[in-house]
Image 1 (cartoon, rainbow, N blue to C red):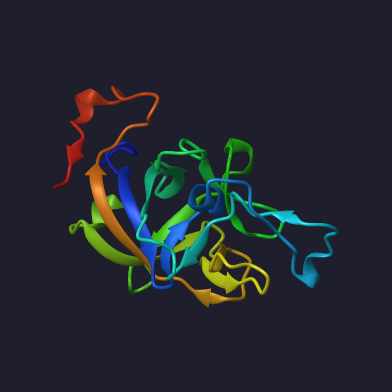
Image 2: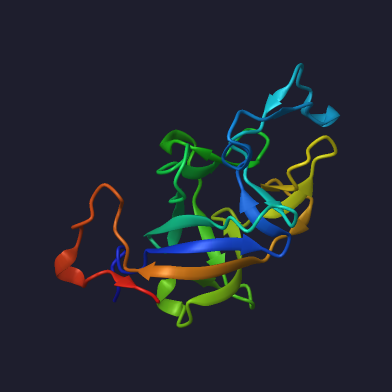
Amino acid sequence: MSTDRQKSFIAELSTNFGHLHFPRLTHNKKVTMQPPKHYKYEGTLDISNYLFADSKNPNNTLRFYFRCTANHYHIYIRTPGAYYGSILGMNKYKTIIATENKDAANFNLLDKNGNVITLDDISSNKLSLTIQTTHGVPLTGTKYMYSHDGHHVNAGGGGSNLVFHLNIIERNASYVDNPDEGRSQGASATVS
């Protein structure tokens, strides 16, 4: 039986809606917009840390660390920049954001048949799959009328289901701040 470390991995991730990006990393500055009317929010909304999928975004593929814990995953950002080391979470609008541990979300990876899978079930380094919250809500893409950054990724229902394209770069990956974690359980395997 594999350990959580052995089921953890680093991968590049894109979607059927295009490449994923955070506006702050893409534009190298704070990004705001007028919120949709249903947000009941006065002023502008800072969307710098919102996760977007955009076919017009240059091919700057984001890199993530999928940390397995009890057969679900916490997803950390491993792309250099302002959010390196942050974790994916949800804000009060159910939008997926780069955040700190207090707002972290847990995710399940689903194969094409809707079965929850871990790295133990993935033999190829390239795979298309669905990601959902551990509460069973699939991640979707919703277009903001006032945003030019593509579809924001959310877990609040609505929008179109996203198909994620996984490109595994390293299997059996450790936490960035604990590179020697579990060395006796098997070395990290970088994929070429």
